Amino acid sequence: MTVTHLLFDCDNTLVLSEEIAFDECTRLVNEVLAKYGVAKTFTPAELLAGYVGMNFRGILVALRTQYQFTISDEELDKYVAQEVERVIARLEKEAIPCVGSMEVLAKLFLDKKYGLAVVSSSALPRVQASIKRTTQSQYFPTDHVFSAATSLPQPSCKPDPAIYIHACQVVGKQPSECVAVEDSKSGTLSAVRAGIPVLGYVGSYPVEKQQEMEKVLKEAGCKLVMAHWKDFEKCLEQY
Image (cartoon, rainbow, N blue to C red; front, side, top):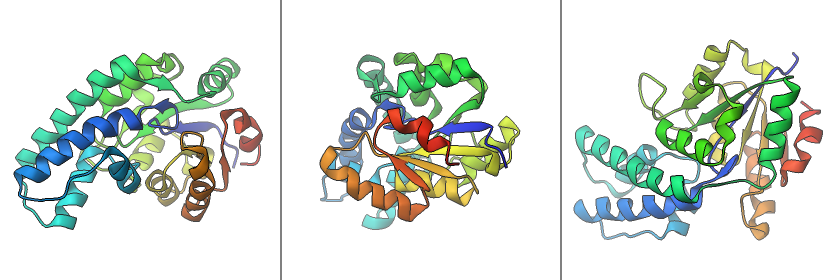
């Protein structure tokens, strides 16, 4: 089936936001763990390595299971909202596009060959702040920016395929008519489980880690993996 729609992850795929977000996220995670009597503290690098591609709710749920502490749904919701507020404040000042992404989006927008959407695990206000700060919002219809944390009746997180299934339904495309662009294992698994072909991107990782992440993404189901946005068009031709 012909590809007609492109579904882009946001964090560290279109916008270099993960380092900013995880710095703020780590501060709050450590506050939560201390409150619930968990001695473990994380550095941003440790949290990023262990939970990249997951939203804050997903991280807290994973930590709750791992460290066996009890947190009420009300408290969970409170911390999720607090994390969004903190991260957005930083992103509005500091977020920048992934190298080469602006040129690709501009060309895709002008060519009008493909429909464009953003499909993220992060809360919708955070995604909107990132693409607005970088001016990428001009390339995406407002109703084609999707969040696993916000856009679904029941909040979710990649690798759950729910957000990709929802995005396909809203844009009116079959999964086989789309290509997802992802930088993480959890994001790749989310798209693959929804039946969507995936193009991996490792350009936001340190150079010394890109080969390792390419292997991870291919094992998760990426057909191809690119290290630079300049290779996007050539890679897309193979889908």
